[in-house]
Structures are given as C-alpha cells and as structure tokens.
Image 1 (cartoon, rainbow, N blue to C red):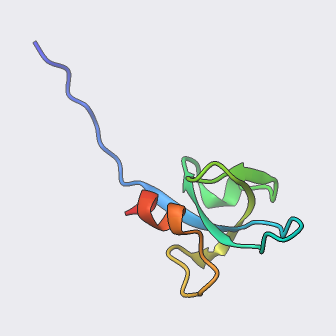
Image 2: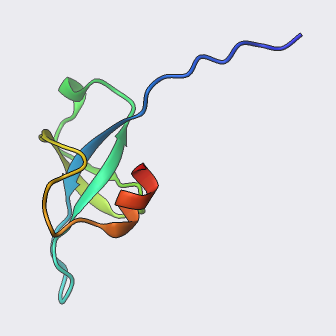
Length: 76
C-alpha cells in the first residue's frame, strides 16, 4: 500500500540582501511556506543560503539586473 503525497505549488518571493564591503546588494529568492501576511520583516534564508529581507510586494523573478544567479537557477 502506498500513501498518497499531496503536492503543493512552491511559492517564491523576492528578498533584498544588504551590501557587505565590496559585495553589492542583490535580489534573492525565498521559498515561502506560510501566508505572506505572516511575514514580519525579519531576515529569511534564501535559496542560495544568504540572509535577506523579504519584499512581499516584489514578485519573483525580479525584473532587474542585480539578481542572484544562484537563486535564479535554484528557483527554476
């Protein structure tokens, strides 16, 4: 007997990292497992492993040039 596994759509939201030294601030992707209204503005772990603040108003993928390449690949 096999158990049925429910699949849900993965929701990605955009998050902006901070600039550190010579590193520029980038847009990253965060996999959101809760309702966007529950996001409190704290830093979240991005797909690439960085910490960044979620911007629920910004859709992922972001139409910008300063986007994390790793997050683009991992969110596809």
